[in-house]
Amino acid sequence: MNTENFSLSEQIVSPSYIRQGLQARRTHEHLIRLLIEKRKCPEDGWDENTIELFLHELAIMDSNNFLGNCGVGEREGRVASNLVAQRHYRFMHGIGRSGDIAAIQPKAAGSSLLNKITNSIVLDILRVAGVRTVSSCFVVPMATGMSLTLCFLALRHRRPKAKFIIWPRIDQKSCFKSMITAGFEPVVIENLLEGDELRTDLQTIETKIQQLGAENVLCVHSTTSCFAPRAPDRLEELAQICAKYDIPHIVNNAYGVQLSKCMHLIQQGARVGRIDAFVQSLDKNFMVPVGGAIVAGFDDVFIQEISKMYPGRASASPSMDVLITLLSLGVNGYKRLLKERKEMFTYLATEMKKLSEAHGERLLETSHNPVSLAMSLKRFHKDNDKAVTQLGSMLFTRLVSGARVVPVGSEQIINGYTFQGFMSHTNSYLCPYLNAASAIGIKKQDVDLFIKKLDKCLKTLLKEKRIPGTEMEIGTEILGKPEDAEMAEWSESVRNSLKVGTDEENHPV
Ligand SMILES: *Cc1c(COP(=O)(O)O)cnc(C)c1O
Image (cartoon, rainbow, N blue to C red):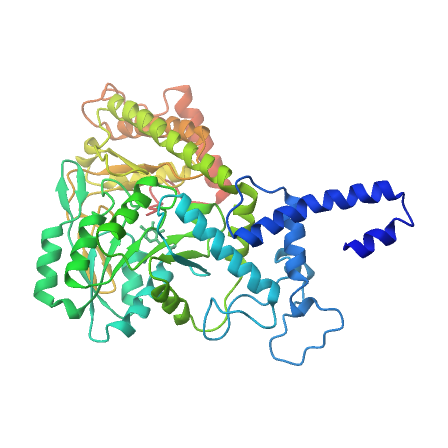
């Protein structure tokens, strides 16, 4: 309601009440004004009413919601289902124009404003999270892998001769495919084993650049967040090498926004050397559905060049999801989530250490990895890797998601490239192991239940396999104890309800 409508209302309802209503509305509007004026994430989260008021105000600025509008074009923001309209708060036009995802859409002033404001507050959050000098970013409605592809394609125009991408090995398929899809040849740099940890081999990278010739290298493609025992890449040194040879540097920061260590590495890399863009997942860092990523960097011109690579218009959904999320959390809410995550990481590490030692294993020493932990499964190794995979299946059947068992020496061929020891980031790691991570949103209850289930699975397996060195070596009866019987019964019922196979049939990777 505007002031005119408010004064008219005073003829119907007592003016003092109407003025109170007007005052109340102004407090919501004040928050909206601050947002548009400062274009920063609010310190404190907004209530849902203010967020919805803001979204409705924006949506009625789009032509599909104009009263009396007649559309005679091929794209008029029409939707058949009201459920779909509601799901999108009646924003139908998406973002961008045919030639640039960041451009203003004339048919949709509200969506355009939403897009610009989202990009501004996301930039603010990247700064709050530790990359203080980031100067430009945009949300792109594609997950991380495709967004990396977009960056490589943008670089092609700057370096038409270059064919190769130098890539310190990380065993995650989408990172690898992002380069293949863009049409480049990955030059895989094996990691160095330092203690238990796998770290960037800087010497080999520099030698490779010299061998290939700097002008033939499109970029160095490094990674921060990753599964232990791999550590985040040595970003400072890589950034210096890139500066020295005048080679672009693209960083895959998939779930690194939530990790102050990774954000610090990016900030330092940009300070002492060269980082052209860093890419992060929306869902992994901001607790929204899968579908978006943020491309960010320190040079506005280059980031704009990437946004101009995107052909056509794009979905506004990921932008709207992250906007709603950040407005409802506020800076303080987001910081609280980061703090809780860090505390849970310490807790998970303590509990996994205890558990692994109780089973004659150990928590691998991976002090540079701030998010993922690995515990050895060396006693399972004797039984080939079958027991290791079986453990993975057992955890999966018992509704433990995200835990990952890694056998040694499993071979995988991806796009014609053969990876020895795939999943372990190296040809042959010291022993099989199990990964668990403490990522944003994790609760103590997740850790406790995971440890309990893992403990039970390990006991059952060791007994079944009669793996030596355990007090259960002599026992042959598997369902001897009530807790095992209960466990077996339960997993049977889960299997039935989910229609999944037995532990042996399942080999989730
Ligand atoms: C999640 C992730 C990706 C990208 O996966 P998308 O499904 O494309 O978002 C890439 N690299 C790493 C290290 C990841 O964790």
